[in-house]
Amino acid sequence: MNQLELLWQYQQADIEADNLEASIRRSPKRQKLVKLRDSFQELQKSLKQVEDEVLAMLDRMDALKDAISLTEDQIKALQARVQNEPASDSAQVRGYIEEAQRLSASLQDFEQETRRLRKIAADRDRVQRDLKVRLVAAKEEFIPLRDEFDSEYKEAQTQIAQMREKAKAKLEGIDAEYIEKYNTIKQHSTPPIAKLRDGQCGGCNMSFPSSVLSSIKSGKLVECETCGRMVIV
Ligand SMILES: [Zn+2]
Image 1 (cartoon, rainbow, N blue to C red):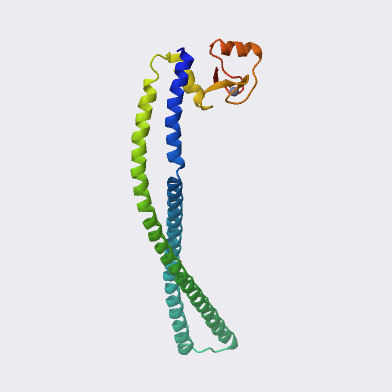
Image 2 (image 1 turned 120 degrees about the vertical axis):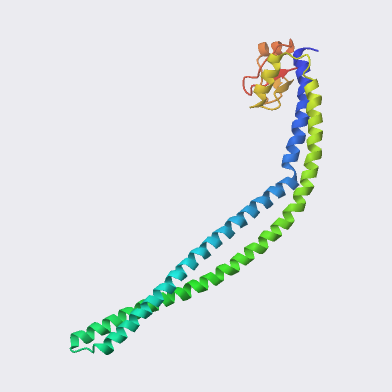
């Protein structure tokens, strides 16, 4: 067997291992796991967001509580002033009225915002509880499936390792130069060796001129100009 034929034998074993590896990666169980994991992370992100919103609202509600009690103190102080220093002219009366209106408007604003926040907080609380329930459910679905996949994966990995060993044994007698070329081509075109089919490259269906065809048929190392694969008879 010449170098290219040996390399072809190696390719058969190498690609077989690759295919098993790819089928594990593409397995429906793994796809489902990836999907479940993504939705789990999405839920976690949403929950964190809601929790942050609730924390910010609680902070704001604390600040409002302080503002309300400060305004109430100011109203009491104004009432005391009105009693202790009754207005002596219309300008002073207007001054007292305006201050009372300003304080009462602020108080109303603060109370209105507090009510609005309380309503939103109650809604967020429901969302938070719902997200937690969904997180638990997602986890319950994920864990058994993951364990099942893990044991299948371990089994497949053993099988793949055996196939890789078998492939490696087939490298014996092949020049390092050929192996390197194979690995380089594999990075962009796989499988790296194609058979000649009806005068065309079996990898990309490009037709070869007769001079190239005779080189291929004589067993020379020929790379397809279009796809870069090594072409053999
Ligand atoms: Zn080609």
